[in-house]
Image (cartoon, rainbow, N blue to C red):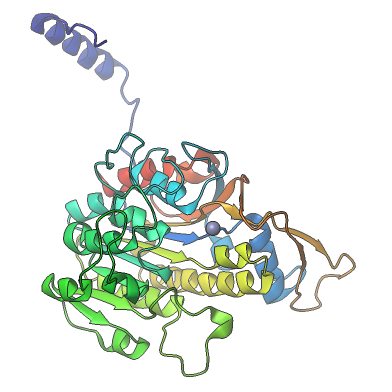
Length: 389
Ligand SMILES: [Zn+2]
């Protein structure tokens, strides 16, 4: 039952008291730090053991840190979803994008059938910033999807594609998943059965399908890059002369386009297949994807360092959504420091996800709130504050 509202006079008095109390207690609250640009970089499934394994694979025992390990702050987050201790990427990405706990499989979509009001991408767009999503999975996969769509089931990728183009309208979408934009069949959410590449062109998107076309796409307007029918080819399997851009190349292209907006931008970049290596219990797969993800972070760090004002106006968050596989590194135990790159010996607990907390590296305005333990929904609060919304 709702409480009976107090009469207006009492409300005015209460309001006056509140104002006086607030004035006498100043300064109690300061506005959250603002950031012109927000860049969220997701290593999907990237538990801490993956980071150790990738560092060993690159520089061996005692070797240098990965690029994102050099960011100013480190913290970690609880990852549980609204219906389980062990979360999937839909629930975790929705927690970041929409600021609440959601069920596994749902994308910014509540139990009772309501879509969440607006995602961080929506808020960024409403503030005048440019927006972009980049992934090595289908671009309609769970992690990017939470930022640009609201659906009850993550499998509704054609509907997610439709919502991107009809509703969220990011300035840039780069990844795999061409087939999701040309699905002959309807999905469970009512999407599909139409050529969304035509819809994209009508909505003002230039459509590119190769790395060369991406490099040549210098025109103004929105950009849709779909470089594979399904997920992009894993790093290990890419032939010389592949037409697919690397994650670092997609990230660089995103930065040079989005940074032209004087109001700033919001960009989400996902190293999607670290998780897929984990599901296959294939450490080589996961590590090669993680190192490619770290290359993309390096591109962002170099972009920030290239101009003096950028560090003070850019919030960079690098984080995992959950851990995959229950990865432990159990050897080789007798390898001393300084002997070069090392393939660690993995032991896996599962082919699914685990309940382990997920790490966060960050720098820039707003990152002070991310330097310890947080719930994953706090990412939404911090970014929302940084966007000034
Ligand atoms: Zn997964």
